[in-house]
Length: 246
Image (cartoon, rainbow, N blue to C red; front, top):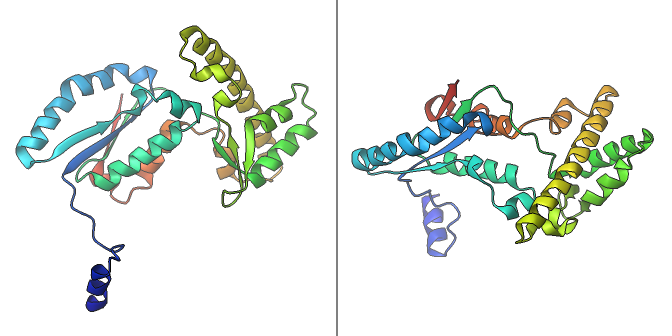
């Protein structure tokens, strides 16, 4: 077995090489936005600089933190990548941090609940059919069809929420007034999509056509998803995560 392993290395087949030991303490900070401003400000201004010095001087480690609430780039917002970006960052922290990797600050708010960026084709078709059968006067079925496009390259096939700028070009404009107006338009559309999908999901759940897990995707907040991925699904949560209640 060993000889085969060494031969693979000599032949350039290095897929099974062990990971290089990390020298980083990388912490993901999870929280809702408006009700934890003071706490997050204090962490950044007073706590993290001290932790950075402590990790370097005591253990020769580099301290890093990721607080996604301090701003998502326009392009990420445009392609609805906020949730995916946060979850990927959590995985990076879990992979590279040699100590604590996840800290959550919990207050009285549940957090923002964005509409899904991706919906399985079978589920989307069922939801759209439900909307059509409800004889919605707001043409919500047409709105769904305009904003969600089928991607057959996905396995399994899925409907993908289109970039905002593909329908509202000024969303990525360099003109502040145009951006504000585009953002206002998107908020109205986003609210319609959210309400439409939730109502359809409720109807389908009552009829036993979808699972609780399918239903939750239209109601769960980013913060809860972060906690699920950062704490509840982590094998070493007791040793690597912290939760602060206000």
